[in-house]
Length: 473
Image 1 (tube, rainbow, N blue to C red):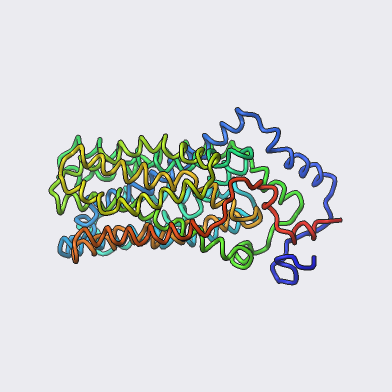
Image 2 (cartoon, one colour):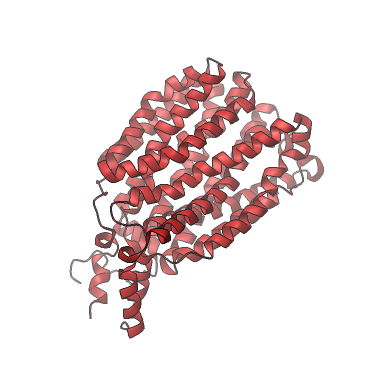
């Protein structure tokens, strides 16, 4: 084991005993998994990852929409409108702060016990918290307890979504055939577009059929209460999917790491930082367009929220095709080429985006949203799952991609509407555009430095050298 990346360290792969005949059989079955999986079984896996993430992101996105529309009045009415909006966005940010904790916890057990079980727990946590938000009393009836409980439920949402993305991504990618990982990984990413589409459709229907008074009084609760139905659907789907072949190989050889997160930091530290840099602009762009623009359009442009919600709905529908297109394209021309193109487009588009919004024309506003989301954002979002997964070995992959994805979400996503709103009030929309351009420059630089991975075989990178040495008879 001389020269292995973790030889002589405390965090060594756990091998309780030599492989038994049963272990050998499991290893053989797992090793054959990628090659023998039939097309229908792969389709079921991809559908399961897509539907599950759709439900999870629906739960997460409806909070952002409610935060932009009514939470400032319902939970922070004792402060002026500006501070109330900031406080509302701050509770939105709390969910992002909690996401890295979910990533560490779910990543740890996902790398030690398996991907499937963690997906079930993450769905339960997310769904229950979302339903309870729909039952919360407002400040008018519960006083300060109302925003306190709201924050606690948002923390629970963050923990649940923190463990969701990594498991759903690996469910698709670790089952997929070589040369198709970009397309396969785009399915759980499509769940983000579908979740946004579903949440905006629900809010559009609710706000379109209720007066402002009815919506503020009780209508805002309906999208949250609907999650109790969706969680049942998601649980039924996830209970019927198998463990991934890649993790089955690790389990069969008994080479799980005792502390996967330590292995990530020690052996994949550079890739972790690169993935975080690649993620930051993509995440910020999403929440600038879907959350901040709602507030900007209403407060500065006197544009109805239904206009923006309709544009976001159209964009989310297009994303169901754009995300898998860019994922599949990365299988042909490379992850780096596609990802870097999205970052550079978003950089150049930041200021024109606001020029288009400021026309106050409905069609032009829709076009602005579509260009920002479906070209800039989706060009990065499509290949992202596969790209990040290929940067880490199987023993630490759940932890690695989850921590990179969720830790960056604090700066890239959670703080983006808050920072953008503060910049807008202080220096105007050019400052918001400059903020987006800065993040895009970071992402473009990280992508340029990152290695190209699309031709790699997961079997070549799924176990580090020390694991193979220890498992050798």
